[in-house]
Image (cartoon, rainbow, N blue to C red):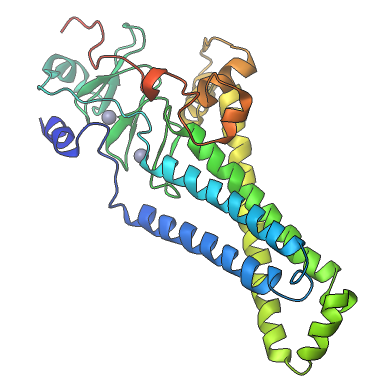
Length: 313
Ligand SMILES: [Zn+2]
Ligand SMILES: [Zn+2]
């Protein structure tokens, strides 16, 4: 049982593909981008004529860094949280009967037995998995209510970390908007129009190269903010649609394929607020904005279930 041995080596909740080059590159890019944005805001926006010397300088410095701190906290939770990996059995399960029954099919890796409350069998993990769990090709594990594998968090987005992922998107969007606003403010209210700016402008007369560097950094930050801002807004919207329609992208695709095949798909329609609470927790709505477990969807943050359904093996 290769998968069981791998699970034992990975430990409980382990198995996430930490060594995925694409994921590691995206993590590095994320931290470099956030670090660069913070540097430009402090060094080339707030500490320059216009903001420098006014009370807005410390105010925006604290507020922007607060948003950045929340962004990083949510990102770290999304990266290191268990997305809801289906535990692997400690002892080998015998699926030889299922294999022989399905061996004629071209896809022998994933065969489901729909007769037992939609529990399925993953032959890659060599275990049973609960309804709505899917196998991730990058993590090499089945994940409960798997949404997708995200290289930006080098982890799957699943039942237990989707909240942190959406919070990360929210704070990234907020930071992008904030950075855009601050950069635009330096152009709308340039230094030479403010009393402090007149003094600084005279002092830096002739220092056009320094001014060009400031402008270059601001333009780069503006482009970065627009690109990342639009990117996270689209994903944030997709995530909300996925929650309130109670269908992950995988299930949406399956639904479309089944519809094309003219098969009826039955699903329970819950109220939107109930679906949102399943992801963000049942506590106060204010808790939805913090990467904490105080309003965890399930007690202890993990669903209690066995890896063995009521199969008659
Ligand atoms: Zn699997
Ligand atoms: Zn994954």
